[in-house]
Amino acid sequence: MDIEKYIASGILELYVAGVLSDKENLEVAANAKKHPEIESEIVAIEASILALTKAAAPKNLTLKGYHDVKNRMSLPRDTKVISLAKEKSNWPTYLGWAASLILAVGFLWMYAENNALKSEINVASQTNTILERQIEAAKTSLEKSQELLTTIRDKDIQVVALGGQAADPNSFAKAYWNKREKKVFIDAQGLPEPPDGMVYQVWSLKLNPLTPTSMGLLEDFITDDNKVFALANPNESEAFGITLEPAGGSVSPNLEQLYTLGVVSSS
Amino acid sequence: MELEVLVEKFRNKDDKAFEKLYEMYSDNICGVINTIVKNTDIAQEICQDVFVKAWKNADSYNASKGRFFTWILNIARNAAIDEVRSKSHKNHKQNLSSDFFVNILENNDDLNNQVDAIGIKSLLMNLKEKCVQIIDLLYFKGYTQKEAAEELAIPVGTVKTRNRSCISQIRGNIAI
Image (cartoon, rainbow over all chains, first blue to last red; front, side, top):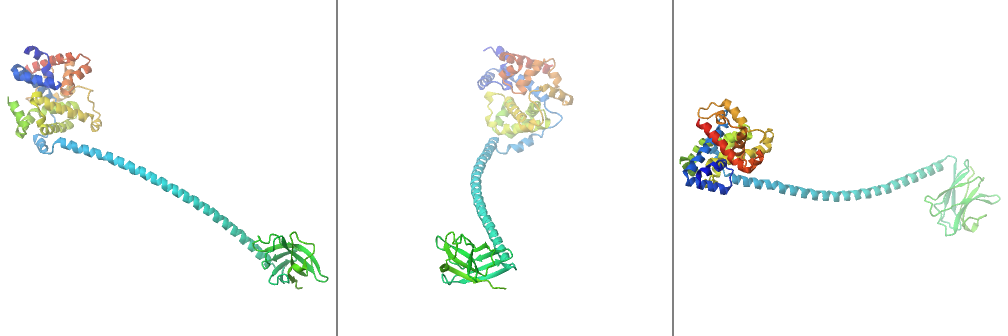
């Protein structure tokens, strides 16, 4: 081995710099052991680097000193600390996954809950509509009742009670006659429902001689709620009668089917 | 020979031996770290860390693979480079490759009142820019031969010979 050439190659400088491969390091160290010239050359190179690096040290500030290092030397090895740190760095990952899972489940639950609430709202609004309609109907019927009451209470009204006759002694009716407005309201609640194909007909009667004049029919008797019917009456009536007649009514009353009759009291 | 004994005792966790090694090399290690982190306070912190790390990993030092100084120099460079690459250091707006160790050395020289230290100007007397660069990369920044060749745009073989000649000049300057 040409020691001079080996030294001149510059490998020893790189050895001191610590930039050689493991294999080259082992070779240089072995050669240094064998040849004192190589060893002393390495020491000389290191000395120059030591001088250079020492000159680079910050001299305006002093080091904390060896005691600071010694205090920390007794602490656990760094490798242990690193392994702890690694474990530590794992749990936020698990936590992240767990959090996202919880979040996903939460979203699903909220979605289901939201749907349930939506259908509840639907049902509630439908119920609302039905209730509103009922209220409206009730209002209308109340208005009608009040209108009826007002009509009946009118001071111009004359009330005529119609008693039951041979056809049905239990039946009764009332006539509310507004002479000024030439209108009669027949309260027919006391009459039985007419059979199919038959209809009640209201007559204005003159007694001397007995002259019936048709005032009209109680149409849609079964479906009418309050069984109060308004009829025009331009006649100078002395009595009112109600007979059962074939649908469409008759020209003259069938007195065998006279249900109720009442005389207007002369006031 | 005394160094070998010290290092062997250090490997066997002899803290008296380690204290001697600390006294021998702490300035150098701190100097290298300082040229990389460019902040004396941070450099001192890392410097202490490096020696604690060296102690805790004493059994991993293998004398047949390199000098003790080279070994601890490696630990120091890695620690300093880790610091420079860390987030906290980036806040200091420092940069690893922007300038060379000489800037620090020149600034230091003004404050240099230590009798036993050789002034940086006399150490680098007559050295060319390309010498300063190659020494900076190989010793202070821990570049490999190949990396240094790429950085300086020269053949890998030239790194070895040029470095040798540059170090020889420094050795000559020390001898003066």
